[in-house]
Image (cartoon, rainbow, N blue to C red):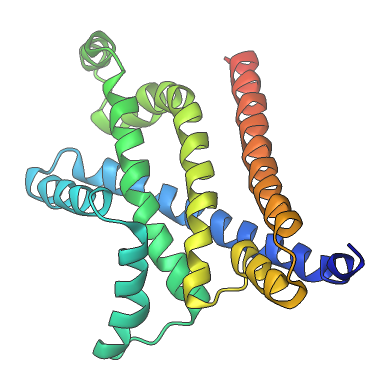
Amino acid sequence: MKDLLLYLPDYLRAMGITLWLSACSALLGGLLGFAVHALCRRRRAAYALWRAYVWLIRGTPYLAQLAVIYFGLPSVGIMLSATGATILSLTLYSAAYFSEIFRSSWQSITRGQLEAAEVHAISRWQSFWHIQTPQAVRFSLPLLGNQLILTIKESAVASVITVPELTMTTGQIVANTYTYVLPYALLILSYWLLAQAVSLGIRLLGRWQTSQG
């Protein structure tokens, strides 16, 4: 137990790295997924390409995608640090899922509202931003929260390319202390607490939106 306390600063630092990786990747992935959805939804060729990308990303393991970016890009002259490769790959990975969330959320808007907007000479972009978007965001909040939790858990894969996040740091603590149960129990507890914090934040945001609407 005393040995583990000596590693507490390293453990807290690793949790900060996990949060940094997850937050950056989720934010960039969400923005990319939303932007692509907004730009490609009316363009068949671009939409078809993006659907193919989503199909590829969702049909392959994230570990393989990370390996392609971290080990493959240097062969074409693009050098990335382990952290940079993780953020890039996790952003591209999460963007595919976020775009599907946005697509399903926008499809939940009834056609009658769009027809009413056309009758009142409201442009498509005005309808998109002022009528569809507020409703779709409210509908998608639980799904966005689930995807953020998934992104946090997938960040553990970065340990295979030596990013010192929670999983890799726990492995190092185990190797140095020869203690297995407590370090991995703390690892599981840490991810569980992060997931609960996200769930709580999404619920509070949903209640705030309801009170504002």
